[in-house]
Image 1 (cartoon, rainbow, N blue to C red):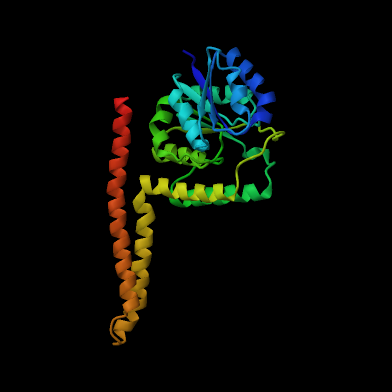
Image 2: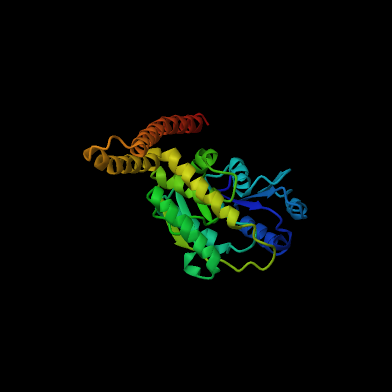
Length: 297
């Protein structure tokens, strides 16, 4: 069994694969690493190109009949991994394969659970995408401790057992990269980042757009509620109660009765706090189920 598996999600990357795939196969075979290629319902001939290599022992090609999403493709690949370590990279040829060696060495040096390839030092992103990533990162920091710089890097190396354990908690969309990072952070795992190089995209077209950013924000909120719902609900509840008292007390003191608006704010605060307590209990039950499934496997 190989020590490391390279998992690559692929969607409509026919042009990039013509140059990238032969290099990737040679690289994986030179290091005796497994290669798991997941075609996510491509509409071009990406799958045909992948199947040209699937008869080789260390290469596994998996295909989705329909496009299920970036995260879904990665999760399918993770399920198929048999090695103790796995690394995910993108299928557009932008990642430098030699960086896999560097990231793997970092992971083994201090037994890290997750090592993220940090692209931020490159400084070549357009201003729109850079601003979007900044908003997402700031939003994540509001909800939980977040020591990671390049939160949504697709270049990640994991201990396979942990990747399999947490995959069910992650979305099928592009938000997978952000959410899996936050899951590892929230569970107190040992995480490292190391700089990697990113090549400019020469062929094909990126599928990231503004809808991706909104979905990512929503998924980050979901994962924050899953792991620490009180941190989301309690501040809202306290704010409502504070506004209610600040608004209503002067009216009561002046002898003008009780403000309906103030009472409404206080009641809303109590309801939100109660919802937070229920969410906390549901969170504990869901995490218990995930842990029990993991130990059974």
